[in-house]
Amino acid sequence: MSFIDKWLKHLEEGAATILIALLTLTIAAQIFFRYFLNSPLSWSEELSQFLLICLCFVAATAVLKRGEHYSIDTFISMLPVEVRRFAEAAALLVELLLLVALAYYSFRIGALYVGTYSLILKIPEEVKAYLMSYCFLSMALHVVVRISKTFKPGA
Image (tube, rainbow, N blue to C red; front, side):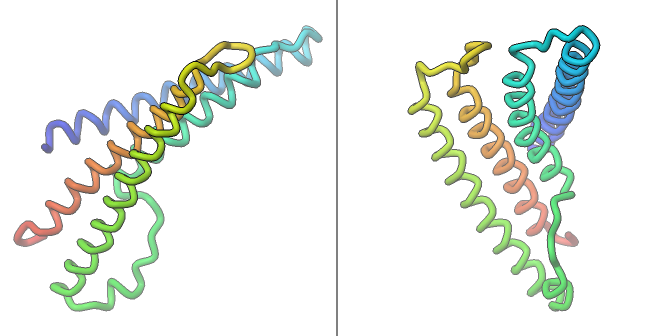
């Protein structure tokens, strides 16, 4: 599991980096064409929105893998070690259930959007929902790894 987890982490961080670069280039092109050439691009707004949606979900997955999502652990850190491990595992289990449910429903939403396309670039609308579904499943995999680490002796 560790190899797959590390591979996914590098894939997601690389994808987030590429998405940031593409988003930056798209917005820079729009600024250049609109204000310097006085000829705005018709497709840049739609592509920027699509890239931003993709970036949000892919980056959220990468951040969750690193364990850098925000959390308020004031009460958990006051607990004794054994109780703290149980509380952390319970919270991770709730997180896992939520992520699996979100993956399921985003997949169902993707199925509803099959056959619909964006106006200008003709990007299939279900791509966003299926990307969300993948990201939720990937986050769930990261949470499973964290749960297994919680129950290891000496963790």
